[in-house]
Length: 543
Image (cartoon, helix red, strand yellow):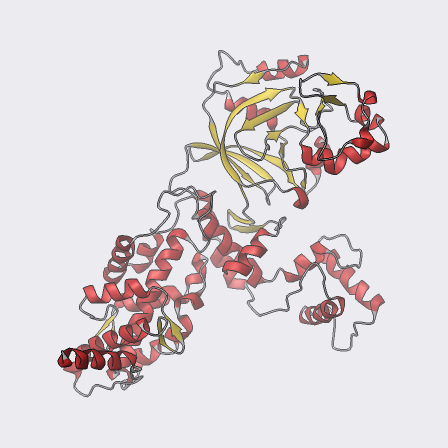
């Protein structure tokens, strides 16, 4: 019993003792054994000290590291006999160049590894340091496991929109990937196989290098918006204008005329109405440094990793910040259309569903949120508002009620036993056609009676539904395989005769409404406005 206690005490003492930072081995034939011992000591120490191998390095995958090294007899994975294996050098190079994959080198111990990699490559004394080799090995293995996780499933948490089956990566995935990387002739190809096969992911990834070749990752002053502390904001603004060489050191924040002139000049250079006043678009552009752009690239790539490994053969893709809808059919774009989406105060929700039918000359039942927030105050002012907007009032029995018989002054959101509907026709807010898909938000795709709004570049203007410019092309696409029942001119004739029809029976088409603020087109990297500040929120929380 005493022996067991002494053994336990000895083990605890060993475990608590911080491993030495140097372990110079005089006899080369003993180096690998000493590396094994150092690896074991480092893992034991880190396990009892918050996964910290030392004060400068936190291990991200402690459980998997311990298992992997135990399984390998604590043998180093990336070096042997005082030299790097080709795979070890390749993993280090991958980390150094990982921005090409939308990753951040600092997430994978790059600063730590860069301080010792060349020493172990060229310095003869360091090459005999078993402690240094073991620390480098653990850092590279930990980095490899985290890279595998980030390439496969990204850094964003899975949520209700996630379409993946493998919502958790298991032990088998990590160990298999680690083995493949440690034995690979081409480490990059192993990592690349973990990435999504989605065409748009590949298109975006392919243009990152061109962006990085000219990117300036200098740290610039960030401007908070909305403005809570005016004095503090304008102090930061002055600093930001100095960084852009728009102002010089002689400028004083009290010079309101000079400030307005500088702001107007900046606005004009960014195609913003040159008001000379600070507003949200101006602040967004001032904050839009290459560092912020790269974060948006990384976020967008990670959003692709939330999609299924294989997309449906045919689907509708709605990208809100791009104000664009496209139909993908057998890996080709069957049609594209401009869209109008929800304004920031009435956002279009993100969702996955299936288009099940469409209706010509639909009747719009106004959502209660719009009734109470917008219409009821107008009706109380002037009952003729209903007539001007082509609106009718119906009761719970679906009977049309004369609005003049209602005491509107007594109605509010807690007492409103009616529905307000808009009659069918060209002046209906839904236009002449609506596409339905099941969702809990009561949103849909539809035509509009304000088609001139499609000429605007900024089209976050709706109450939440998505208005589609090429609605006729989309409708014809949905019934393309039933030319007997729906000849080519069917829809045109219905519209000309102003006939209401509910069209169903076609194969349901999946629809994905998503939020991606950048994309690759050819050799170009295109950024879209972060209209709902979603990427800003994700960057602050996860990047």
